[in-house]
Length: 351
Image 1 (cartoon, rainbow, N blue to C red):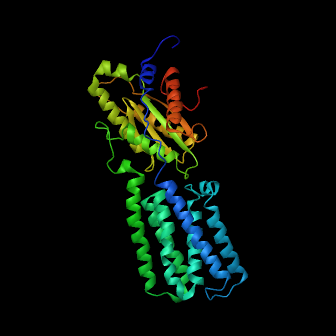
Image 2: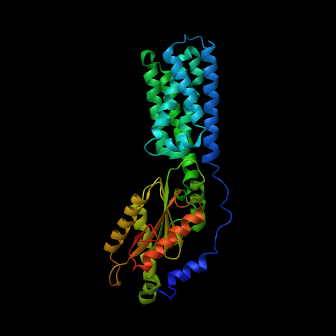
Image 3: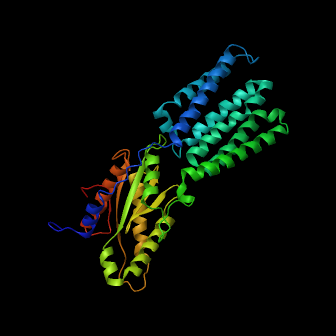
């Protein structure tokens, strides 16, 4: 390959200047909304702590309750801190936060006695938080957990009001979850799509990636760049109609091989990109390898041999934390795979 410019290197040279400049705004969904909910939580915890220790609730103070009140206030303070939020905002730990929130709310309602009925609406806060950060399904799960938590505290004196309150939790989860699910994942709601494959196009994909990278709620994110090996030669030999069939088949294989939260786009020509939130290098490599194996088994009428792909990956925030930085690094690694003969998944330029 030394001294020779391949079609793939020519393509990257021609497209390097085509950089989107209007993707600099921070996420208006995740960052401000999280901070607003955290501030509301802190105000509520502070007011409740004041009322409790100054005897304004009419409840007797004891050591256990006092510890719970202080712990609730400390939890609210820590949720304004980035590291604590990032630690909690993962698929495995997210339920720690919502459980703690619901427990402290249930405790407030229980300790407040007859005044507790006016605090029921605070149950909506963790439900909205789940909808904003994890989507509709998780919001419904959060609403169900809120109902169970309320039931646990009210079991000795269960009334018909409990069922109305639980129903209101589910209604809130459905309403906010559907609304925010469409805003968080516009790739499911008919955003700009490629006419051939039905996938997202370049601009909306960059906007979603920018939104994810500027949020405070991710621990790691992997970007996969995939390109069909020898695609120009395939077009010249079999015709562009056959090339289009290959692109459509590959897009379907990619969509079938990723999770609901992952975002797939046809970035340009035969180049596809996949955003994998909360995914490390090892898992991303497995996804790319499975795609290679699935494509190798696919049969295309009139084509001799198998269609192969090369993939490069980059992990945020460890290797890059901007849209262009991730794309550049993942694309370089993808071209490295082509230089090595194609049909490779590359995560380091030293491979």
